Structures are given as C-alpha cells and as structure tokens.
Length: 244
Image (cartoon, rainbow, N blue to C red):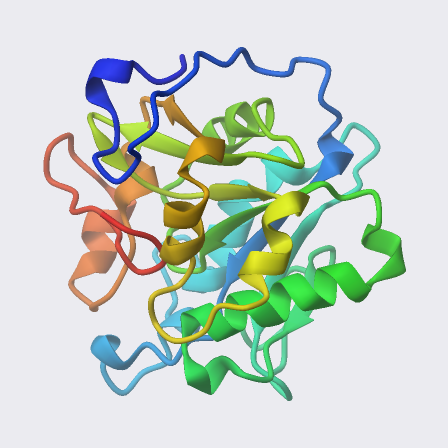
C-alpha cells in the first residue's frame, strides 16, 4: 500500500504522486547495506554489535539473518553487505560468510561519513555495476521483517528514495537510487542521510507497512528485550540515520 497524501511526512513539501510497485523489478538491482561501523557510545562499555541475543547470535548477526531472505534470490545469491571499520573481523562480529563486507575508513567522523564510504565502495566495485539502488538500514535493528524489505524493493528505481512508514512514523530500511549516490558520497557527521532526503523530497516514495520493527533500534542494553518482543504502540522511532 502506498502513501496516503493526507498523512504525508511534514518534511516533504511536494505532493506525493501515487506510485504502483514495479512488480517486474529484479532482486539483483538492489543491494542491502547494513550500517555497523559506529561506536555505540550510548550502549555502554560493551560493543553492542557482539552482544549475544537469546537465539544465540550476535546483535549484528541477528539483524543480518532477519533481513537476508529479502536480498537472496532463487539461486541462493546474497546481495547483502555489512559496513564495518577497517581491520575488524567479520566473523567476530557474527557476519555470515555469504554477506559482503564494506569498510568505512572514516567511521570515526560519524554515520554520514560511513554511509559515504559504503557508497564509494559500491560504486568502485565492478561486480556491483548492475546495482541501481541501495537499501540502507542500521545494524541494531533485528526486528525488521524480511517480507517488509522485499515489498519495499518493488518500489525502487535509480531515481527514487523509498521509505517505509508504520502508523504515521517513518523508519528503515531506506532505499536510495543510483541517481542520489553522488549526494550520499558528500555527507558526513552524525546527521546521516537526512540532508539528502530533504534536498530530493520530490523523489520520495513512502510505503505504509504493518511492521513495527522498522522503527526499533537498540541504543541501550535495556532495549534488547523490547526489540525482540515489540508490542504495538510501545516502540520509539529510530532517528539515528534519518529525520523523524
């Protein structure tokens, strides 16, 4: 279900145009990019990416496993990447072997710089030349359903930004078409990609979903239980990457 113009994001000043999903869109056109190069200062002294959840996996590994089916085609090819810092071990962070790893050498400068590093790596990889959009989400969002992400892929294109919305609140993942990548390469700091969305509001497609997980990220240790057993109306919106 696409967006109702009466419930528009107040940051988007242009009228929304009804958009039908591109049912013929091939899975291989979109790369899932999971941001996991941050320093998690609000979580405490532990690296939250490696915290073991009840299912036995790390927080980052659980997030990747939850979303992976949306980025795996019928031949078993996985188009999902984790963005981590230089010199870090993917296996120590619980990243599955089938997932790509992108390095963020400028991670210390904030989430925006990590996104820019990731986009640069995608553009410079000849194997990823067919990719026309990236679906960006955070590595601490284990409750997003794979079918939600798969539905968003149907709206993607090289010229669009696609965002999910649950009960009027915008969340993740956010899909950016290739035409926006040059702008993403220029961002830095902790504001993430919000400035790119504001500058290209006419490209925004908002898709209403029934998945509270799109709002839920883990900032503190006490958030873990809430993340794994969300109840309607109890989840705060994630504002780490984009505007809310």
